[in-house]
Length: 242
Image 1 (tube, rainbow, N blue to C red):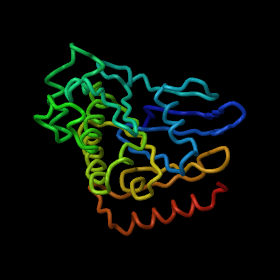
Image 2: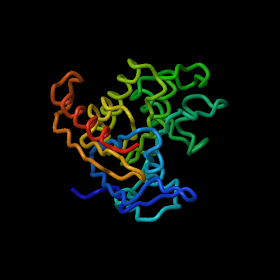
Image 3: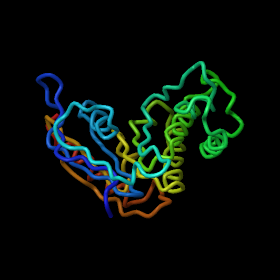
Image 4: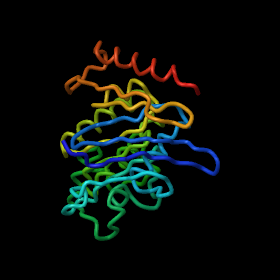
C-alpha cells in the first residue's frame, strides 16, 4: 500500500540542541499510527513537521499527490487544546477556514458525527472540555482531509471522556477512510487506537521500536493481546537513556 505521507531522515535542532535525528516514518491509507514517548522527546515537533507547520529541518517530507486531489484539504490537524475562537459559535468555529462561505450542510453533518447535533449556536464558553474538543475534531474534519494529525488531543479531559473521544476518532477514521497520526505519551491509548506504535527514544530522539497491533476492531480494552503489547512498549521506553 503506497504511503499518503512520508518523512525521511528528519533531523531537527533548536540552536545547539538536536531533538530529532534520522527519523523516518510512513503513513498508509486507512492506517492509524501513534508516536509514543515521554514529554520533551520531540513528538509534537515531528507532528508539526508532518503538518507542514515547521519547515526548518533537515530531511524530506513527501505528500502523496492524492492528498491534493479534488476538494480535499489533504491534512487536518487537531491540537492538544481546542483553540476555539471565543467570539464565534460552534458552527462558525467548525467552518472557520471558509468564513461566511462555510458549507452549512457539511457543518451540520459534522455536528451530528461528533455528537453535538443542535449545538451549533452555542459559544465555546458554554461547552465542557470534552465538548470543546469534539468541536476541534469536527473543525479538523471540515476540509475533508485524508490524513488527520492529532497532538495529544485527549490529555486535558477526564478518563471517561478520554475513552469516549478515542472511540469517536476511530469511528470517524473508519467512516471517512482517514489515516491518523497521533502523538501521545499514554501507553493504553497508543496500543488501543493504533495499527502501529512508533516509540521515540534516545538523545536526540530516534524511532527505537515499532509495534504492530494485529487486533481487529472494535477492540476490548481488557484484551490480553493489548496488555502484552503495552508491556512491550513499556520495556522499550524504560530501556531508553532519558
